[in-house]
Image 1 (cartoon, rainbow, N blue to C red):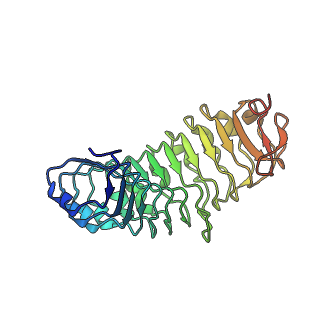
Image 2: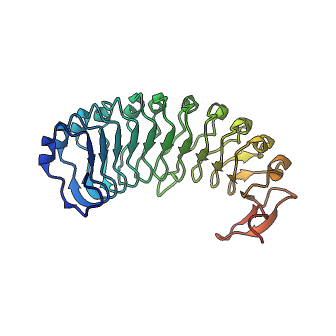
Length: 301
């Protein structure tokens, strides 16, 4: 382990000679330059932690040799794309993949869906484009899927709700630069994601209505859907969610009343447009100068 030791410079090609190494931790240093292809010779590698460095370039094709890999964390570097989908598809034992906050572009490889043990996939804060591949939903053990703050577009996968182990689904903030973001509807069968605790779809072009089945998500704590094109009314079934703490649906096309079942939950954080009618909330000036309804109890002393 050489993490947090102020190591700087390139990863030497000689590291590939460590063919028996199982755990390589070089995170939180000052490493730069590309990942050498010789690292593919480390066929016994199970854990690779390189986050919080200044590494650049693409992942070499040779990473497909890591057939014993269980965890890889490359967050907060300067890696670019494309991702070598064919090589990643060899990580059949991998449970944890995190590449948050890099500059990885091109499309998401569908090969991620071929990883039968994958629990966590974090590709947030990159420059990914194209659609979320339908094949991704074949990774049936996924619990955390974070694809936020990219430039993804098109619909959510039809089979998304087959990921019944999902706890966190974050696809927000894909409406960036010239990208219109995701443009589908919230799945009608959203109730199948019964383990879900955090659902963030804000800042896209999501349309349609909020399905009544969302009220069956008893574990849901956070629902952020603001800054979309969602229409219709807020379903009264949302008041049936046992664990909900935050609801944000402002800056959409919603109409009608805020259901009493939602109001009486006394949520710490509820944001809706003032065009909706409600007796349990008051209209306040929000920090971003948009007029919103917000719950009073936790905001005004």
